[in-house]
Length: 70
Image (cartoon, rainbow, N blue to C red; front, top):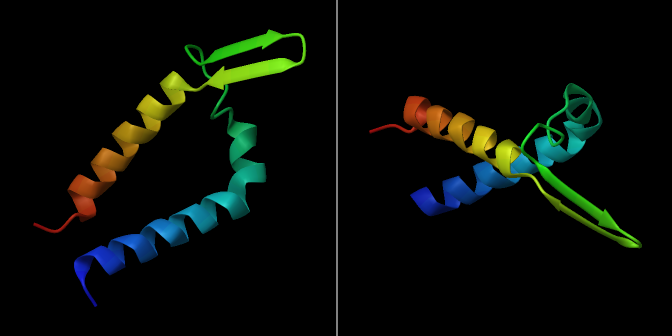
């Protein structure tokens, strides 16, 4: 199995786990942090989770550095 296939399998499993645990993860406030932009006007709702994405990026970077291999 090539490295890219392993990456896609792991990414898929992580997305599956995230979907399964979302009811519990949403209770810790992830996605509603200060710095996340939410605009509501009439029937339109726009949400840009800037700070949440930054935190997830830092966590993913740390995990890849620890478990990345090389």
